[in-house]
Image (tube, rainbow over all chains, first blue to last red; front, side):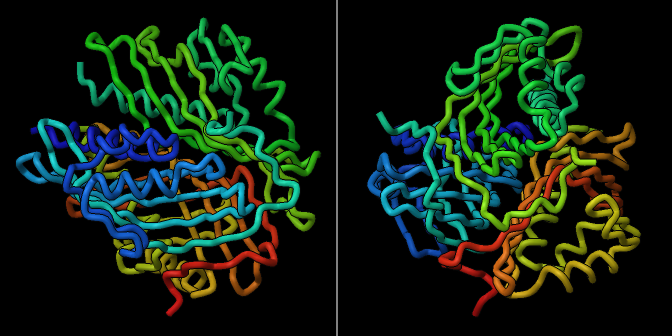
Amino acid sequence: MNTLYEIELIKQLKARYFRTLDTNEWTGFGQCLTVDCKARYRGGKWSFDSRSEIVGFMKEHMSAETLLSMHTGHHPEISVDKNGVTAVGTWYLHDVIINIEHRTILTGAAIYADEYRKDSGEWRISKTGYERTFECLEPLHEKHRILHNMFAG
Amino acid sequence: MNTLYEIELIKQLKARYFRTLDTNEWTGFGQCLTVDCKARYRGGKWSFDSRSEIVGFMKEHMSAETLLSMHTGHHPEISVDKNGVTAVGTWYLHDVIINIEHRTILTGAAIYADEYRKDSGEWRISKTGYERTFECLEPLHEKHRILHNMFAG
Amino acid sequence: MNTLYEIELIKQLKARYFRTLDTNEWTGFGQCLTVDCKARYRGGKWSFDSRSEIVGFMKEHMSAETLLSMHTGHHPEISVDKNGVTAVGTWYLHDVIINIEHRTILTGAAIYADEYRKDSGEWRISKTGYERTFECLEPLHEKHRILHNMFAG
């Protein structure tokens, strides 16, 4: 088992997770998760016990044309077990969510604690969740303009 | 060929690309690109077909003392071909551009699709470009103050 | 010596440095530094010559319940010496500091230049510092609200 190689694969998995989340590619997003994946976002405020629950929630709450999000994950601290079958990881989240309808911008930071499992030869997230360090909400500036929105026709 | 080592070299290449861009080190920036590098920024709105065109454009548009930029690239998903001579990569861009003269701040996110080529033993970017997820423009707060500007005397 | 493995360890070291800084875990933060660590933040404006000086300063200036910070480090360019005992690294810092009491938000970017040393088998930061590319200060929007603050009761 090449630990560094497994760590690189897990980093790329998390990269796909964030990319598909913000581009609303829900099939690709679901493939990042094990079928029995548990999620505890915001210290457990949002709690889910399967891939379908997580994808369903995200699809419902994150895929409006009026909702622009940027989730970036920094500073991975990943450890792979000796057999290369499970792993744990910490990430530092920075997120920005612009609600065009309500004209608000939410910004925050959080520490992610993840678990990963090799599933038919592929790493997936088996447990995920984060604790906020902080979260802020403010109105958009009255002259704030969206120059580009990938979801708008 | 050690794939992980090549991936690490490409990450460091992209690191130099962003660092030299924001610090306006145009010689170092040019060295990140192959001579025939193609660039298609903002879904092709800005389109260039050589290193000299790309460097020329950046030099002209990004090197004013009144323009402060932060380009950070996240979530690399890099694959190297079997011979270790070419590679492709995806990055998640977060950018902020403060225009002191116009008193505006532009913020955005985008997905980069890059191609890399080994050129006299060194990785360079042979094709680059991104598609915006979103881009926003707003006026600077009337009490917004620049405490430090590396380009100001 | 496996260079890539040492580079990964140094990335995880810097990850702990930023995580413990923003979560105010000062014991963990101190363990990221050699006892004789030198720090030159903001081009030397803040200058320290030992772990205890650095930790003391951070503890005093960064651990108020009214101070929320996000420090993220991007684009590591790390080189390890041939013996795997010392290393140097560049990082691109993005930082945000919200002062709830003064109702201000400071944002900035900087280029970090670090030195690392293996110390009883563990990498630590032996010298650190950054040069700002820019730094801005503005008032918080009058309707800016903190929805979550990990330091508030």
